[in-house]
Length: 179
Ligand code: HEC
Image 1: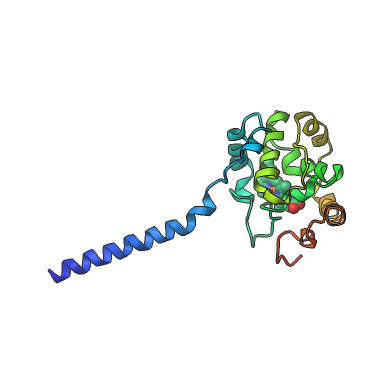
Image 2: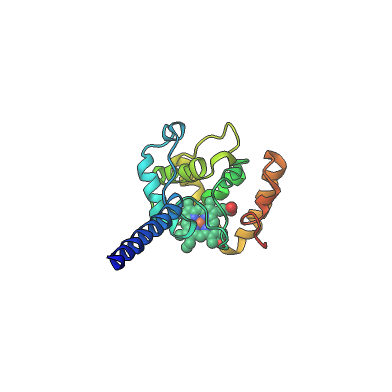
């Protein structure tokens, strides 16, 4: 009898432990909700979200956060790059964006609006207009290379800091990053 009680106790403890682990992991594995105002600017919000998961989240994480991996943090930061026409073009010229296998420009615009307005959260300067299909079609012709990218990013981050009061940490890939 005592043995069985011990077993039950152990099983219960295991149950509690695994439930605890599941709970702890849960928030980071779920896509964020898409606010109604952002939905209104998208042709197909659900497609934009699943496109991000399929094409981008493998590297950037479902919520745009991969700290401390050596990758720029998208979550609550990427919106600052909507500061000037040049810096918003940078987002569409990124190699993984410009060369995306999503050939439909309106669909890629939706995906980038998801990235900026949902994952970027409060970092988007007020009054920012969403990306459009024709804008994507134009900018993706000027894809950046891994050579030009780093210097261009730093230049545009400095511009966003100066013109849109982005935090100076935007120069870094993520808060606390060594470079
Ligand atoms: C193979 C991994 C990988 C995939 C897939 C990928 N990215 Fe990236 N992304 C990177 C890396 C690495 C960087 C840093 C710049 C560089 O080296 O390209 C980056 C930079 C960025 C940035 C710039 C952020 C900043 O602060 O400058 C954005 C925005 C971005 N990616 C969005 C996307 C989107 C949207 C997709 C999907 C269409 C995507 N990425 C797919 C690895 C990836």
